[in-house]
Amino acid sequence: MVSQTERADLIAQYAAGYATVMEALAGIGDAEWDAREAPGEWSPRQVVHHLADSEMASALRLRQMLVAEQAEIVPYDQDEYARVLYYDRPVEGSLAAFAGARAATVPILERMTEEEWARTAHHPEEPVYGTELWLRYYARHAHDHADQIRRARAAARDAQTRGTQVTA
Image 1 (cartoon, rainbow, N blue to C red):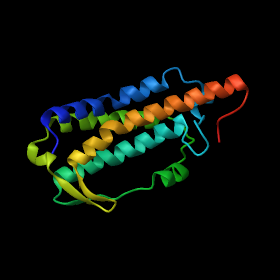
Image 2: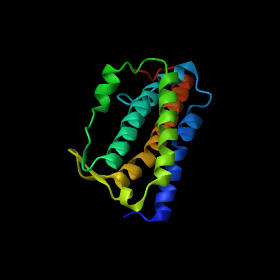
Image 3: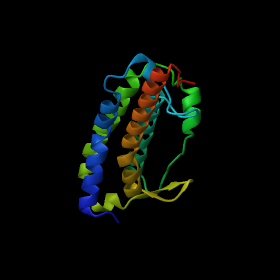
């Protein structure tokens, strides 16, 4: 069980996720959008699209847990999403979707009751999945990807200094 203080901190961290990603993207140059920190890693462009897809899915998951007894959570393959959903497309719509999902979800999190924080769902990849685990995961998710964006941008700057490329 998460304490009310820890929950408030996690909600604040979740609420700050979009701004943290935008800070990581501030001043990004054309070459940096498709740079990778290492082969096989996602570029900032791909991270933005992933965040939009993940945020839309996670927002729906939370809502399902709140309205349905033992909601059925359907997992998705993030790498298949990246492969099939044109992660090379412009980022503006995905940034808007990410921002919108967070902005629409924070007020729900702030109003949830203790009973709602105890809600669980069936998730085939998690033995125990519920609203508290959801919050713990998604509070950190955008921040982790902001770090990934920063590392990819740093790799692009380093490669530019060396005269090489870090895209794939």
